Image (cartoon, rainbow, N blue to C red; front, side, top):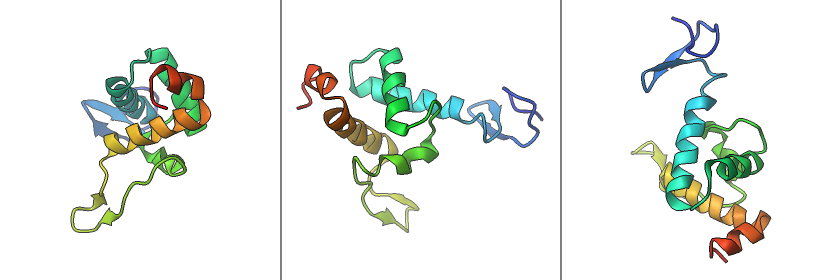
Length: 114
């Protein structure tokens, strides 16, 4: 099996597509963008611009959530459930909101976040 987007043979199956670790961002970006779009009335173009600034890179993925710790707390790690107390979507929304307030104040004001 090859990656659906490149020639890599080291792939995982995710949502019906074969991804290598380098191309996994395609799937993760879609999830991240949709979570933000459900909570903030922004265009996809603006969401992508802001996420690139938020994550500090052109492509971003769920494994980059450590870059958001400066904006919001994930809560404690729950060993029995093998997850953080705050679910991923809820955490992303909280971090994104704080990022807008701190770094993109005019946008935050337009969205009545301040």
